[in-house]
Length: 197
Image 1 (cartoon, one colour):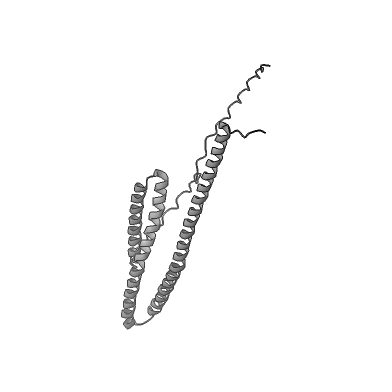
Image 2: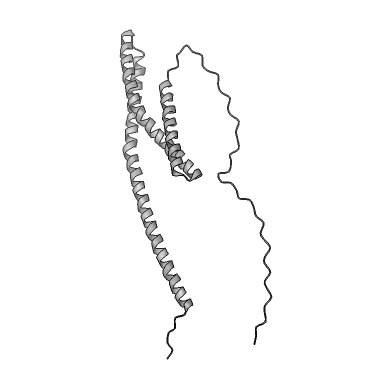
């Protein structure tokens, strides 16, 4: 009867097999947790989209109706001009109330975009957060200026000259192509050594 003998090689193979099984289980657990995190994020985004889009649509419809009423008020006599001015004041108040959340959302989107871009380049979370805050503040300020000056050009001023269309630039590759490296010559096989008999 032959006894089972465990050699060092057999023990190493068993150790490697147990290690690989443990790595596989740990990776499966981490992927499961990552999937749950993505599921929660997807649910949050869907909920935000579901709740925010109807508010934006209703606000747009309200502004359209107010603009329609203002267009009708233009055809009324001088006494109706004061009503149009008060309606314009109401529209500006509504626009101001709407503009602030739009500025914040736009700033948040710009901040997230610039933050991720900066993080991908520098791999430094602190610098990325600083860049995101700066981009969000800049986008909010730009949008605030755009909304303040929108539609306020006096009728007497001349229309500015049209800007020339910029020349088209070729689009760069999204990823730089790696430099082709020539294949090395194959290593010659060593000659067979004669075995001792």
